[in-house]
Image (tube, rainbow, N blue to C red; front, top):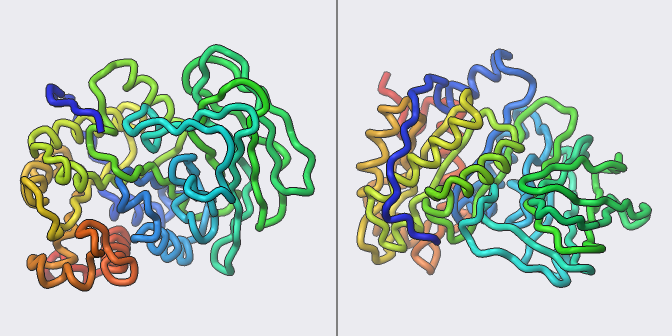
Amino acid sequence: MLAVDDAQPVAASVVQVGDARERFAQWREGKSGKVLSVSVIGDSYSAGQDFYLNKLVQRVAGEVGFAGPGYVGFNHGAALGGTHFKYTRSSDKYFGGDWKVSDLGQASPDSRTVTGRPGAWLQVDASPTPRIDTAVTQAKLLYLGNGESSEIRYRWSPAQDWQPLKLEGSGVQEVPLTGLSAAKDWSFKLEVVKGAPTLFGLWMSNDQNGVRVSKLAASGAASADFYHQDPQWQVQWKAAVSKIPADVYLIMLGGNDQGFGVKPAQYLQNVQGLVGMLREIQPQASINLIMRQDTTRSSAYPMSAYAQVLEPWALEQRLGYANLQCAFGPDVKRYAAAMIGPDKIHPVPATGGKVIADYFYGWITGAKDRCDASPK
């Protein structure tokens, strides 16, 4: 994490576009197109899709349709990673050769980039299920040009011939990928041939109606990793994130701010900066701030200290706001043993993860029995 102790609040005009629940309802009523694009910005709670995100996306997409994987970053992969779109840097089945993985805090959709030398390769495997059609009809590669020419090659199945592709230009770039396989169980492989290209990830879609969820999250990330004062950093970050369509942003940061002892006022300034950048690139998007529940980890500030500064500002700015403490209940010791893992930080997927997924589902879809539902 890069400290931004002298960050200043970013002025942001009040844009009344509704929270996630209102935007979802409008979309289901047919008022905003055939696809609802959602981008999730966060830390390991969201980057590790098994905690809640995979369950949530499968449940919602199973009901309203699946419009493709969206952003598949080469840092942490897809929202449906591990089940439907398999990729991880921690396995030599999917990531090998001479790659340099950047530190956190890069001006990248998921806070990191990967730079490869000739022979470096990566792979994404699709695995369909009855309710999730993994076929894709459009794909593009997002990368950071350095003014020099690099070359990669790629294919969509082991039986397909390699397709060469030159990567040129400076700054944030995108290039369409061709030769997509009609098969639902495709296997995309990319290999560096020449130069040292710096890559962000893939963006992919299909021609179906439904939700498309992009995961813009990074394990270990704090609020300062998604907002820097440096103007050039902001220009690059906005250019990269603007390549990923979004009708709704779900932002859940703060857990690592707590771990690093970041002051609540500093956390708020970083979130204000992040929201300001999003409003510049997607002024009509619904922006929603989610506060994580507390755990038994020793820390300088409880999560409620961050909530106390975030909630009033979110309401003032007409942003969506939700607090997972509502779902877990006020007594940390009562739920921690069964729902929080031995690291005292992350939820147990089958218990705490399910609570989070169920809460998000109820909040987004407007379920009447959720813990924060308005009284009748």
